[in-house]
Length: 345
Image 1 (cartoon, rainbow, N blue to C red):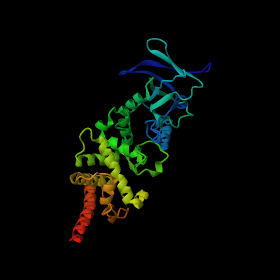
Image 2: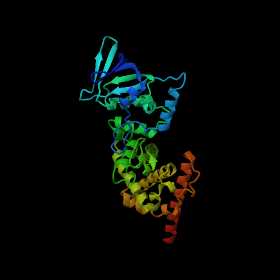
Image 3: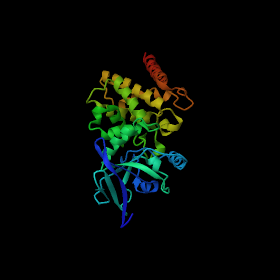
Image 4: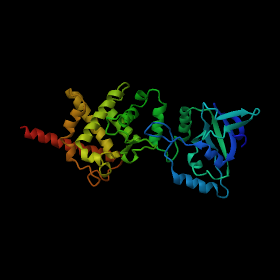
């Protein structure tokens, strides 16, 4: 450090097609000059998983132990317009990263947030590889390649990355497009209640994960024969209308998600299967598959089912459990239909 500048030396080169600097620096220097870009589900900014303090503390204990080591930390110097940092090529291989002392945190922690999280006071020297000038979108691409198979990384977080990187999500991944529509539309009973793997002020109200919802919607699209390109927008509206009806018919259960299977995986999968059946029936009879239609049909049999944690869905799991749950709901529907026929005689 000196003259209001922080200087970090390294070797300049490339990692495949991207320019990088390889070097070594004290852990506290790298920690205090860098930041994790955790996904903020309320604003849609960021891309990384929620911070796990225990994971980070485990690494702190390990890195101070005898014989410890780690692979290079992956960082990125994001483009800035305020001359906060500068890369100076010293010769064909050596480079110097010069950072203004008042620039704040200039390195994005592409793949090291838990390793650096609790090292702000340690002088241990660590290796790093720093990309030079990647955009946030390019960071997400690198992060996905590094972490797509990482143990413990939320699949919903990876799905949100795919949505961010896709140029035509409705046709590339219609089930993901529809799941995000449910989460982002303020009219939806699922508004901001799907867990995307980041942080949110509505975290305690989350009812299911993004991955669970999109897998259930994929079932709906296949069974309703809506998986063809170009159907995503109309299918999204149909799914939204269906869930509006469900939350109306089962208002008490919807208001107490932790005590009922309604919004747990088994309930979401089973209800999406039933939605496909009702959609096909509505299409066959010329009905508009809107909230009014779904509400009138669902109100005849959904309230007859015990959705509580102690009810018949308890113990159901896996594909077999979903099948059993669908049969249970379908059975209630058929019994109500038979009752109507008998009363009409």
